[in-house]
Amino acid sequence: MKTASRPFGCLLFVTLLTAASADEPAEFDRFRGVEGPAAEGTGFFRLEKRGERDLLATPEGNLYLALGINHISAIGSGKFRDEPFTTEYGRDWERFWQECLGPQLHDWHVTSFGYGGPSTLLDRLPYFATITVAPIEKHRSESDLKKRNSYHFPDVFDPEWQEKTRASIEQFASRHRDDPYLIGYLWTDTPTWSLLETRALRGTDWITEIRRLPPGAPGRMAYAKFLTRRYTGRLDEFRELYGLEIDALEELASINLDSVPVGRHRVQDDDEAFLPEIAKAYYATAGTALRAADPNHLNFGDRYLAGDAPPAVLEAAMPYIDAVAVQPGDRYSRLYPPSTTFPEEEIEQLHRITKKPVLICDHAISYPTEDQPRTIFEQMPSEEAAVQATRRFLEAAFAKPYIIGYLRCQYVDRPAGFGRGLRQGLVRRDGTPRDGMVEVYRSAFRQALAALPSMR
Image (cartoon, rainbow, N blue to C red; front, side, top):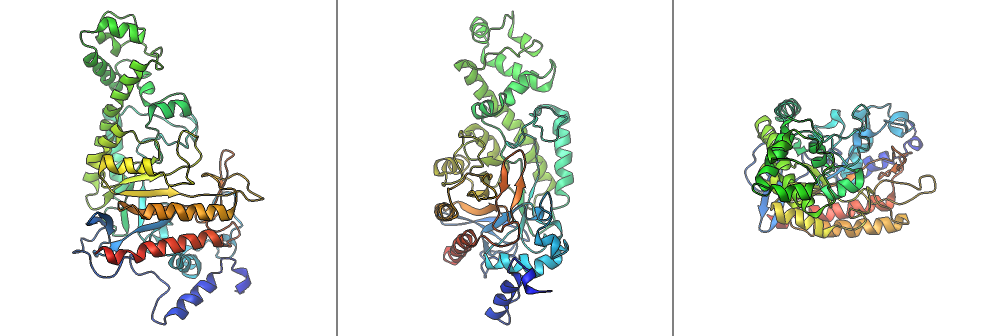
């Protein structure tokens, strides 16, 4: 095959790796951890503490940072089928890994696939497994359950939902629980927890949907019991606040609640007080099920969007998660901090409340191009500005002693649905790297890994 037909520059990568050392294979060391055990190996990834520094440890016990790129399995799918993966490599993952992807990731100091890694290559690099516990992701935009991109706030108090969730988690975990390459599990992607932000985004929220359940539904019963306890002996006050002509609080389980005035401060206070009850049921169901289905691996819980992780929700998650996952930005709305700067206040809050390490689980800073002026994640005006903003972001992130990993969004350019333009990758659609962006990641990842030996 002609070298000119390889726009990824993959032959160059292989040549450089071979020239560096005749004994150094192009393949990765097993887990790309720092040599020399930090502690006795357990056979699976786990958390370690070195002074104030939180770290991961590999199954053998080596210190480790999860530095990855998400969604690599999306190569060759969707509208862009003229990528080199298809035209030059015949969609052969093994060949693509040996000749291109593996050498590239090695050169960039990438240590994991992130999530969305190719299923046939998950024995080459560590990875994260993802499962949606509830379809409440920010990117879901349809309220009609019959449509593909629909969102739904389930009745987490319903034993039927709880049993289905336990069964789903058990089935999912059974495929991963003995795999030493799995770092841990990530749950629902950017879930809509915050009541005010969710109402602004969708015109509804989890508690509004609980109020809409039919009389007798477990969630309605739980909500009625909550308000009954809260307003015992204060029926007249409740009737005035909620505008409901009832003779007893016990009627709340059976009457229509669509007219509840959510804009009133006291009603909002009640809603905020009931939200932890939903979170406790949600996390107890899923967290207990995952611990039972897979006691070997780490649980990172929901992938919170920075700015949408209410303290009461984090407190409900604490008993069931080992670390916190967060996605900074993605142009959902100005209600959330953008991806272009490190959201220090929001991420500090995650760590302070949960007292857990933090994984930046999905992030990018994009810029407009002539053929793709619209991109997901917030934009900087030019490639150079995006490179510098990325450098500042990574420096700020790795300076935090509780950051245990960083996962970049997208390896190669992908079309984004619903008029959002482009999912901008580290390499373009034709396979040529974005040299400035690649270099900032290569440099930041190398420096972060170089700091690990001093943390023994």
